[in-house]
Length: 339
Length: 288
Image 1 (cartoon, each protein chain N blue to C red):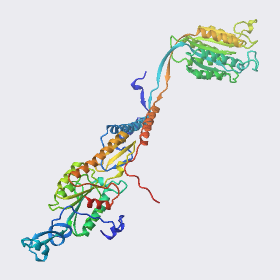
Image 2: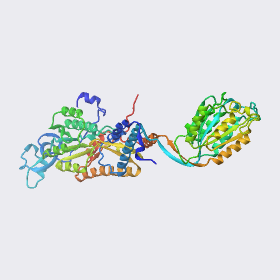
Image 3: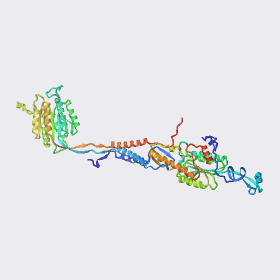
Image 4: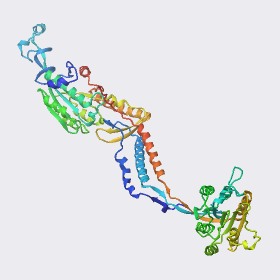
């Protein structure tokens, strides 16, 4: 995984200080005891070796400090990961109506809002599918890029946590979907890719925008799921109105968006959920369907190795300090200062 | 000794050195020691026939009358003669080491002053050679005061590594027997001392060692960086009980080797490990 070329030095010029490591061999920096004649001192190999070891430790401490100053590190790299799961782009509606309950009221103690229910269930979905890569786009008046495609679940959970904040007025589905396409980075023929649209309403999509979306879906074989959080007594996706004159995109935008999605020619399923339990069932269905092999490149950040160099230097210094504490001055007693 | 030097001398003023010689001095100069020659006065030595010493003033009437053959006898007395004292001082760098009682060098200078005073007071000639590889201070044996040479000693700083100057001086001392003081810390190989004692075989030698108590006070554990005063070489010593025992044994062996060498040449060593004690020197000189 690590080749020789992956090493790097942030400040290579600091290595110019490396000759300082020779200092302990020129100057030991110890207390010196003057001794008249060392001729009667017996030869002691242990002392000679200890002397060498102490000097090596001094050189090592200086060299490690210099190396730490030079900033050693491992270059960042791309690692290919393969797992079972899917690449899921969540396109989440942040319009104001998401903050009301399924019954269309402001949430009180007993009933949670649509956004809170979606948040809870999406988090459970993400937790269960730990090998998925998830990207999130929110939309209301304009699309908001929330999270790029990632397998960092902490980030995904935090992004989902944010979706029940109070939203804005409009619901611009088309631009949200267009941004979701940007989340899918590299093309992988094996991977299962899905867009999960979570919304409680729709808007009319312009004819020209429709053409662009159609071209985008044609270029990329991905699955499309629409979790339609239906408010009570609002028109559903599937039933046609009794009066054919009312069947216009302006009067029934959800139904016409559904028909537009059906006409795209990609695997598409719509779930119409008007309670938290139905929403859970819909998510379970998606969970069942989206299983495939995903492979992606994970970027590993550059790794700073200077703490290891500092630790080595600190260890050498600590050993030297211990030996320093055993240093003694022998021979004559120090002169006594008299007042 | 000059008045100024005496004023700063820490030794009590009444302390003086006394020495006696182990042999009868040959020489014509009158002095304080027992001489080999006979003279007109002094301690009675023997009776000789008048023919051998025809001096009617020393005629011993009682001995002459007692002789049944009628021979005449004359008394002979010992001539008191002056001797020559030579001081050889080792000034190698190791003598600058101060173990708490003054360096060997400063104690040697102090003892030299006592010797010079003692020699001057009884009319002996006083000579001096101080040096290591080469002689630093030299004075031939003279009866005059030695102030200039002693002041030169005060100015000298110990340096160098051998005692070649002392060996050279010993070889040129001449054949007349002298009292020779060898003042040193004997921090060198015993072989050099053997050479010196060999060169001094004709003389009466007093080796005085100025040792240091401090050298035997070693801790049980510790790391010490020793700087040899003579070679300047640094050496790290990891002191631990095993090495400490070996070290002290080696030091003791060296001290004993020096003392044994001196004994073998018939010149017992005087060991002065502490402060200079003139009375101890006198006692050694009178008792040996």
